[in-house]
Length: 197
Length: 234
Image 1 (tube, rainbow over the protein chains, first blue to last red):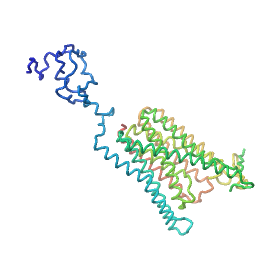
Image 2 (tube, chains in turn purple, orange; image 1 turned 180 degrees about the horizontal axis):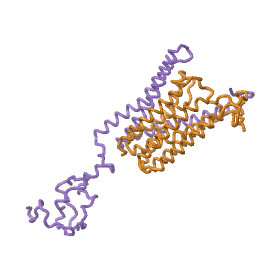
Image 3 (cartoon, one colour; image 1 turned 90 degrees about the vertical axis):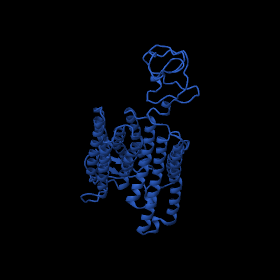
Image 4 (cartoon, rainbow over the protein chains, first blue to last red; image 1 turned 60 degrees about the horizontal axis):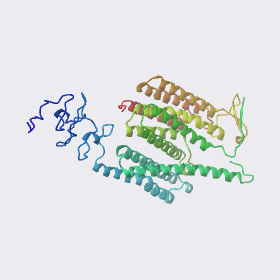
């Protein structure tokens, strides 16, 4: 029993519309709806009447501005990423960057150096096909990693930047393809007597 | 009644194929949103599936032709890319898994059917020699009559899409949505393999490599559908 004569371990005196002069939360309301305990030793506004038959307001937080436990969870009930998760997100983003830019560049250079269908011989075309497939798979893997980062680590700034870069590059590629087609059509029109095969 | 296709400066084959893919993606996005999928999930799925369709189509042409100087778009590769993109997105997001996969399988015949309009105008993938009703005469091939295989495929696959949509919308439970995906896979496979015999490029044997590839893709798609249907929907 405390000095006010109130035993916090008992549910006496706290009914639907009773005032709490000390502003202390009744014992059964020390837990949020997820069953977690509110920070102890924190005072709640004094003289406030408890709503009848209702749990303590969800938006209440301690005077120190500490976020109550239920706000550490997103609407899907998943915990927001902690500090060590940013490290995982960064690693995934770096691998994605490597797959998007470095691997295709390296294998395209190898393709130019070693694989050429005009040289003849099935080995050269197989090698160029193999290198081309690695470039394509690497490009797709970069997208997969970026999407995984954006889904699982939503707060990662690196992931957001990566997403914007990839989308911009894709859009520029599509625009470039359209311009290339239009340029080819225009060139063909200006060739006198040229007949398309 | 016959069709005469003159030799055109530019056939707009690429824009038509790209447009058919975009139309399919838009329809899939609308259906995903109607199923209750989040906007961010729809955006990522659409982006990734589009990238997969393009990249896998190019990769398939490299594998089949074995010459990087002859790369192009192959329908089978596009189907592989669509399944790869849809299944990967479903496994990453784990949200409305059955509906998210089903809608992409539903729009695949729509994309393919509309892209065949480009083939019809361009004169590629033309049919066997044929002089009956609705035969196609291409100026570039000397004016001989061909079977209208491209238009036949357009009509067939758009019909398959409509049938799939009817099955999808007729039931409200996710199990009926998966049933629509299976129906579309089976009908599309039968239609594609059977109509390959009406194409001039068919080798003449019982089954061409391309028909075998179509069958393998269909089996993989069916197994993926069964696997996803056994996952929790959310």
